[in-house]
Amino acid sequence: MTQAHPSRHLDRRRLLQLSGASAAAIALGISAPDADAESLPHRAGLFGLGVASGAPRPDGAVLWTRLAPEPLAEDGHGGMPLRPASVRWEVARDPDFRRIDRRGQALATPELAHAVHPRVEGLEPATDYFYRFVVGRQISPVGRFRTLPAAGMEVDSFSVGVVSCQAWYHGHFTTHKHLAAEEDLDLVLFVGDYIYEYGITEANLWRQGAEVTTAHAVETETLEQYRLRYSLFKSDPHLMTLHARAPSVSVWDDHEVQNGYSGHSSTSGVPDELFAHRIAVAYRAYYENMPLDIAALPDGPSTDITTGFDVGTLARFSLLDSRQFRDGEPEDTDEQYAEDRTILGTEQEAWIEQRLIDSPATWNLMANGVVLAAISEDRTDMWDGYPAARQRLLDVMSVSRNPVMLTGDIHRHVAAELKADFADPGSENVGVELICTSVASDGDGAPTDSYTDDWTQHEYVKLYDGRRGYVHVRLTPEEMVSSFYIVEWVEADDSAPRELRARFRTPADDPRLSPVTEELR
Ligand SMILES: [Fe+2]
Image 1 (spheres, protein in one colour):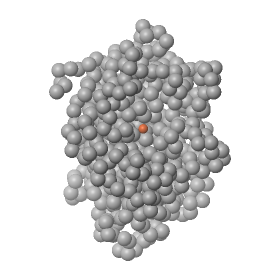
Image 2 (image 1 turned 90 degrees about the vertical axis):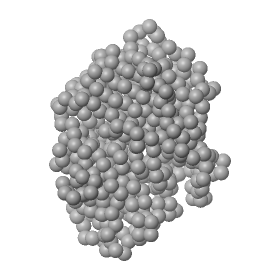
Image 3 (image 1 turned 135 degrees about the vertical axis):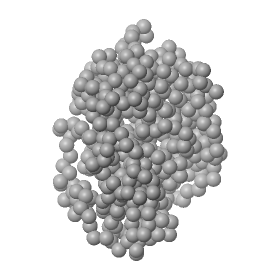
Image 4 (image 1 turned 180 degrees about the horizontal axis):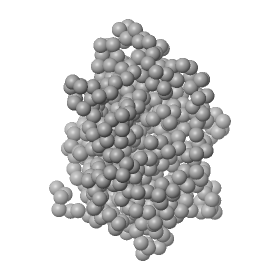
């Protein structure tokens, strides 16, 4: 499924040689001797970080778990001894595993924080499956996934939950609880800031009832610190439930490494040569903790998370990396408006243009870390900082079928129609952008705030809300229905009910956001 850029192929063989036979065994699916499972720690169970599936295909998916009997052990190893452990996995059509469809083994090694990413293949398309992991006598929680429809197949409906910005310390993951329990879900899409790198102290710990040790008080810089940060965030029970509920795919934004970083450059004055180390360990921890294909295993400070997949003829998804290849902050407006300025990098830009133009699908969804719509030229961290690159993408969207951008980053629900030329508000719509508010970042929030007018002054912005929530997108051959849910609070506890804040219909081949008001409570 991964459709890598031709010239960004990573030298996996070299990396596997460096990592030793254990990593090679994972990549190749070779089973290793059972590493005396009975002697492994089991005080809290080995599966303290839950299970996940991802990278779905018509014939299977990647399964994920990370052995961690003590997820918050401060060395980042989750309480595991520094030796490999063999992990069995099983896939079945029934949740009781009476008949196993596929089974296999993967090796959990300390080099990859005892995470495993086996790819299960040979399954039926558009079918529900259950999976679990087994180590010795310990059995993991059961997860489920649905395989994608076969290529070229007509599909009646496909539903995606979109979430973003999980500042664990700012609130409870109530949003995930509702998304997992109450929505029809073929896929969950994380659109960036899965973790935050900031030190967590009394000052920013707004999540009531939570406590953290001083190990979390510093900004993450080392591999061990990033691993521990993933463990902390992933220890949220609602996030684990959501991962077990449906397969997920993800793009990242900046906080998976450092606030505001560009390409290979930090925002803290660290020389690029030194910052490369931090990028390398942050990307590695991301791979370790997400249900990603082996193609996303980083090679030092570079990795390929740009990927895509088709949902029959209904939808084509393209996951973009808007961090790793972007030019840095502009010095002045000449630089900001320069024709050759890029946010995706030349190769990725060519890749997405070709995918849009060649697409056989009715709907063409892209996901990226930062807002595409024109809001203010002062917001240089978003596509507003890359106007020539935005125009090139809009030009391609104008000749594509039903392009939709899915975005996070701003901790606000925003829905915007995308104009052929943002300098001419009367120009035609070429697509729509659905911007998902945060799961927890910025705490409870409020319906309006000091930024509201900056956004709603534009006629093409159809929604603004500063509370926490998620977006649910349902695609059919006739229309896309996007539903923006909010929860009133996240700081005090996880009991807030969800509320439907806005719902829009976008008819196929008519790129607009048409409010649906009769269904709002
Ligand atoms: Fe964020």
